[in-house]
Length: 64
Length: 374
Image 1 (tube, rainbow over the protein chains, first blue to last red):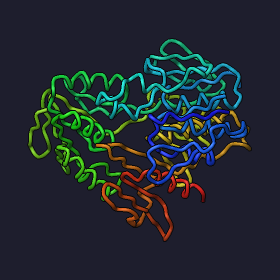
Image 2: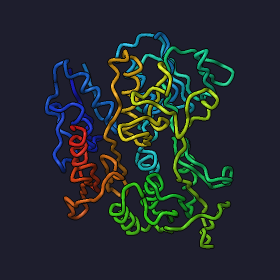
Image 3: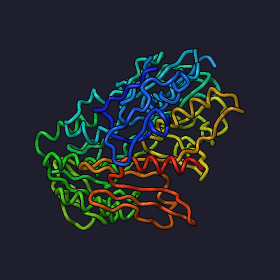
Image 4: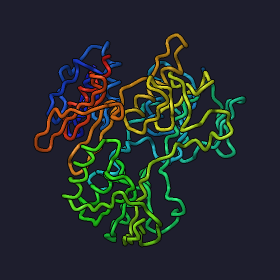
């Protein structure tokens, strides 16, 4: 699957890091999230979709 | 279960509907919303949308992918538990499963409805009305120094408006505690916002607000920001328990019901610490997901909903954030206090129970993870 983050929207709330650890990462003072794995396996789809659902600025997309 | 109805097209209702489909519900799904709009994100309303930095359309949340019948612009008006139907005026929508996510409404100032220039802020249409009023550069009084009141004060002061915030409390945003509250007040005052704290409002009239001290504040624009009340009027007489919101068990089911769940601002559920109702964004999303998953799950697979709550509020480019229940802390330890950054840990009986920050970056998310891990 393909994970994309709209970095113009991202406000570093950090919900995604909790929902999909290993896919997203954030340092204490980072302004935007880092996508560690842009093409995780299908076994992570539920986690990434959960991350997208909990993103307060709707910046995450879980694509095909 | 062949027909599920979701009452409420806000964040909780949207996340519930999405979850139902993701978890394989293939029957008829109907989403009822009292506003004419598709689900949208409310946090920007009091900030970017009010200030004009962001278009209202940009708040819309993706919802096209959900196969559902949307009944928008009409509020649910009744619930018949025996016949399993939701009433919308003279129409009825039958259900096998029901998600109640009807949210809250802004609490009005008693008797002030209909007075020219008096507003509340809850939805897109409210913001449009306030923005229209701003064109006349009104002197503005905000009644209530809670999150909405303070966010609106910051947005309007940022536009150069003359803003005064009135509250009976001695500091703004009481739930944030005295330290963050004092910093918030100082931040607002630096940007020219006036406060009348520890002060009540005696009366509201067109063009002015009279305070309990006798002072009269001229105000062409008045924002009433004194909290919200759960939208449960449509459930009166239905047989559901409604003290302080739709009363739910620890799995988000309405008390005594096996096919009705509630989620978001309207739901008062049995959390580990007791009956809890939370009016914050993250809870609406998480509880919408949890309630929908439990509605579809067999009883032995239902999961108790007991999150560590979190919230944020942005004002003057500063972010106030909390993880956990601040009220549970016996004392606070300052972890970081440098420049614009403040991070506090709340401790009870020697254990971390919550954290609060101003401009704490991702630290609050990390505290939340730590609190959830046990």
